[in-house]
Length: 363
Ligand SMILES: *Cc1c(COP(=O)(O)O)cnc(C)c1O
Image (tube, rainbow, N blue to C red):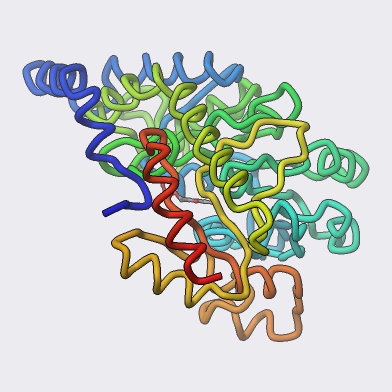
């Protein structure tokens, strides 16, 4: 059995530290916004090179609160990619704004910066690039369009903790960076969790208020906020994993390197790296016309595989009627032939060999 991600092994390797931290929290009985949350925020901000990090209850909330803090609302348009998890577009809708989908680059699967300019209208306020599968979006090109058009950048870093564009970590390039700590993410806790990073003092202050019922001083409420806090137990787990995140990401890159060399010349299209940043391989996603057969064969061999994502957002039932006239051929093609293979830091060379053999049997 080879899973997509081996959370059990990762836990066992750090069990003593995590168990001890959780038990200490149970003894102290401070469960919400305690000392581990503040320490984690400081440590994560330091690791990423961001001035502020504000922990929240999920990656979806990170995106939602970031858009509220950015002042985006009804009548506004926000440009993003159609090839992402639904949460990116949900957050835009939560604030009453309209997602405008721009097609992707077929090599990186990220938003194609060359197509952003044509989608900008007088209502466009922001662009949300998603660093999909751990591959940084082309931030220099995106920054150039956004500077020219006066648009804010809000990064969706749910899959890219530790990835870099040039020498800048994702989440420190736009005005706001949104992270998810869903268990299977590169940095994951044992429940839901998320975080917003920013270099802007006012945004950080606003986020601290928004996540806690619009309150900066206890029982004084200056605006309608939310209940969106990271809990202390999750912060304990995240602090333990943050210490190891560089090694985790290096492990993912090692596995990806093995796959790409073993799958060379098979006709399968392996992930592209432009060499300008650091890809942290949240997923190892390939393109192949034989997706169904390969997945079936992997399944028989007890090897997990998955399709991220089978339907681009403009074709999802919830959005289909509003975007019937929109055609985004690259995203539609990629959705039709992409598949992701298991990748996790603890994966052994033998396991990679096993996956590759099962793939090659079909070819
Ligand atoms: C996981 C994910 C989210 C949402 O994060 P949650 O913590 O599950 O709410 C948002 N965007 C992308 C690209 C994701 O992969």
